[in-house]
Length: 355
Image (cartoon, rainbow, N blue to C red; front, top):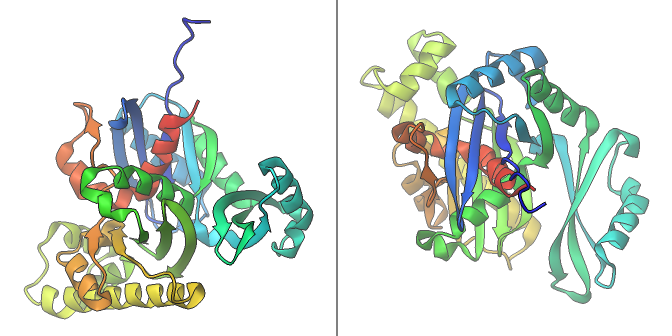
């Protein structure tokens, strides 16, 4: 059928601990165009430790985000959090085809996964030839409890959406990184790059070498700690503290006594994170470049402070670099929110390529 209708792209839907983010991208030649985008806050306790505690509440927030964004498409790509995913790097014979490799992994999976196989979703990615053995390849195995996937699917469906892709957050970071690195201003990213995504309650580290994810880890740390310190120091509610943190209007001593110590703590956490990677990877894997993502990355001079701590060139993530946008997209909001859209943008990039 030479007049077959072109499939619409999938929406990227990121359900984080404090908000839902939606974005729709369309393909434009070799790049992408932002057709619709929105952020909608989540009530406290709707998400607990990145697991959905209140499916109906999350679904209502997704509906509001879709209305804000004016996105009409109903097919979606979603992701499960790294904290609910077990990853393991294994080696396999280079002679195996991808189908043979999949069969072998399923046979041996119980060696690597501490759950019954009927309770998990399995995926794998070939990283490339093993450095120490030319006859084997490194394979990144990922497994997630099925209930974590089911809850996200249920929230999306309750919001009137149809999930077509369920990805792992770390892989979406890989997708968005490839898009950022394709821009001329980011050509120096073709080596080993660390992306630190600082969320409200959780910070993730993804290390990418030659555009392939080689390491991922999460730890409990995020911008919520700054919000709680503002609450305690100035006797504010959580919502009031969050609003003043973003918009300004806090007392004169805020910067010196609250903000600056938190930025120092953040830079130390990033440094500690990288040390964990170096311990796991050995001396051969130096980080050439660091990208900070998440809402906390927007704190004034955090990139410069982090760079001074770790001695690695550091920049703030912009997953929308090089993209065009439709008239209904607010460009000012786009620039302010960009660092926190790493996962949603990575999902939307996969969605734009989905056929």
